[in-house]
Length: 259
Ligand code: NI
Image (cartoon, helix red, strand yellow):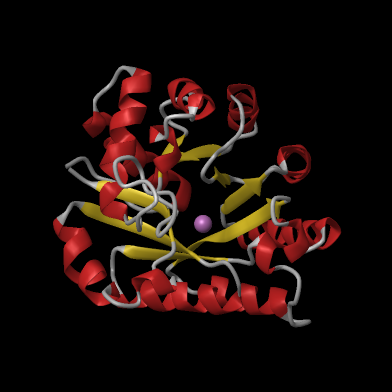
């Protein structure tokens, strides 16, 4: 069994106490095969690259998250571009729009920073990892306009929206939320996303699946989400995990061989 976690934050302070143990031994022993560690600002993007250099199976995404888009240095985009040139950086992310915490950063500023990074990804030929919270309309508008390759992570929209994403060429990332009791939407989406467009992910340390909901999440818990996705699609947990590995390798340009 191999697990591909297409979205995690192991630079987060929630892992300060046992990061080395987790990343060196625990996760690989539990079948975690590859991880994309996502940046949320310049600091955490730099830490993502560092983690990717320390652990062979970790790859990095670099970018500025909408919540961190308010107070940026003038040369922020150049800094992100510089980091993105590293050979272990496989995506620009996580980037997008978040209207839930609107106080953190005004909408127009979020859009400007998002657009700049969509352009950067295009210039560098990298896929994007997108965060969209309560901003479906504006996010879709920008995706229609820029047509990036990439994934909508922790997808929270309707089945209809998932279909449009797929028609735009995007992938759909599903994590712990599919196991939540009230996640009817998420399970509908899990059932209809084409087999070549679904990615497995955690958003660790957040979004732990049932029965660990509310606790610290890590990549080894992905089988709980995969099992639920399997139930929705009428396939096994193993098949979902395999799908997650194959699709992520295709999107992020990594090699994939059958086990
Ligand atoms: Ni995230």
